[in-house]
Image (cartoon, rainbow, N blue to C red; front, side, top):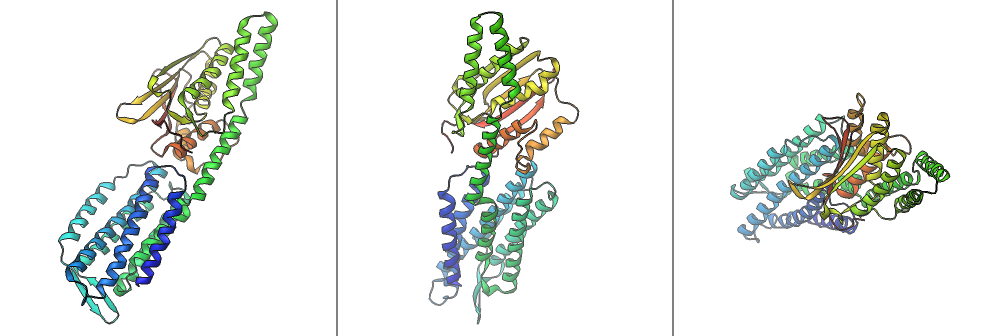
Length: 437
């Protein structure tokens, strides 16, 4: 058994090396998996130590044996809690529901920790091998059963809303742990709990956390952005150039030169696709060039900016503002003859100094009946949407995916309806001056 524990430790050390050496997004999900990997390796070290000491009761001091077993059982309760927490985040990402079971999970973890320290330890000596039993050892079984029930409940209640890949990973992990726990219960001398938790970790690693999979997702998003930016609406280009041509024919106004310059600026800035993140000032410069051209084409169209000057150097995902503003024009103000106002606001969130919000407000016609619910569902289930290369929603879906992948799951795009007409697009973003590649 000791050799099996050593083999499991070596496997997880290798997985941890590959995992931590790969570039990735530091989201709550990945932070939890990182903690789980480290904690499980430490747990397996104590597992291996207790396998040795429990089978050498005549030579290992009782106090040392007790201390090692208490740490082993306490760390096991922590591990199964981390498995629950990881699965809870997965379910929450797929459904957007509040994880109301979290409080019960945390309370039980405290209870298990106290029980690990105060309950008496007993060791069973058998011809097949020694092991700890009695009420202290039951903490392992109760902890595993409790958190497995929580996970199974989340999976069943949210079955239809969870992405297929996540559903498969959670289901496989639960089946592995249930099977191994039953074997351990019927054969206490086998001491295979560490194998079960290692297999659960590998199930999540291979299906959800593999660096190659994550890189493929980021590549898909970059390719989608490249496609989107290479397909700048030709009608916008042709109509703008035609407006400039007509103006040039009428007179030699300097305004024509200015418009041409803004058009050049727009395309010069929009083709910078080699960077995932740019400064907010760069995004605004691109947007200003675009809006100056649109306001010239539609004289009754207005644009206002309210930007916190401290946020100009903050890094944001490249090319996220123009698609949102264009969406406001095409689906809000177009129906009103492009007569109205677009207002862009960028401000720090008062409740979180590490987050900011960008708002794009319009005075357009608002959502058609049932449209907002459709958009809300698409943005919430962004990771279940197939890549789109055509259609009106490619812009906002692409923006949502890139914000989620580059900035974390607590950031993103959503829409609200204005009380006085029109809609507001909200983008929650981190305040950082470092580029995440």
